[in-house]
Length: 307
Image (tube, rainbow, N blue to C red; front, side, top):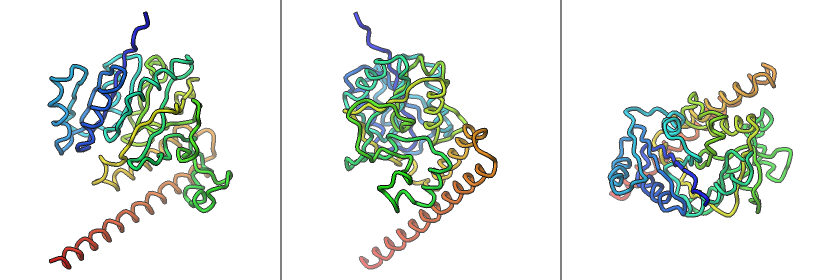
């Protein structure tokens, strides 16, 4: 008799609105039983209260409320540290998981003892693939390509290829990849014991790249599994704090380079990378600020005209 694996799903919430309930419901309706642990990082909307009201009805639902926003990594670790499991499913609150997705990825991980971490196709709401669902590890060269937008200027060039590959033609069979997206990851519990929990120095963003890198360094495969998918609304929680989210993204990339490439690249190369990362943060922040101002002026002018 084959026993069903013990699966714990972790959903970290921060002002995700109605998406949180949709996410939790989709996991509970999977064709494999999961214990769903929702960790709320001091949300100010009613998303967590809405889901917590289901706790008494759903025996597989556990809700934890933190008094402060402790970040994504610490919140996920809060669950993994206290809930031993055969598999951990880490899901963003703005995701809807297909009914066969978790069981299919668990099945693919069980095929080979070396498979430690897996994911699948992650789609936008409009059905287009998200480019971060399959990735190569960033390097100074790929960072320069992205900074100068060479991948956009020469989209068919293999020399100026972006390290995000999710928008390319998806593979028809399970393949190994450098990295997957932290929006949806399935990790083998035995592998997590050897690799370790998420690095809590990342507040949000890049902790997934870090984890993938450490899985490979511990001689585990990171796999992409076709045939199933997750819909990811992307950016729901950080919509009102876009500059802050951008800062943590770029700060996380700096930490990734410092942690894994300190011995590989010389100090001048690393400093060029750091300068490029901060320049990109400045340009993107300025663009978003300008967009917000123009959007406000357009809305204000439209309201004046209507009145």
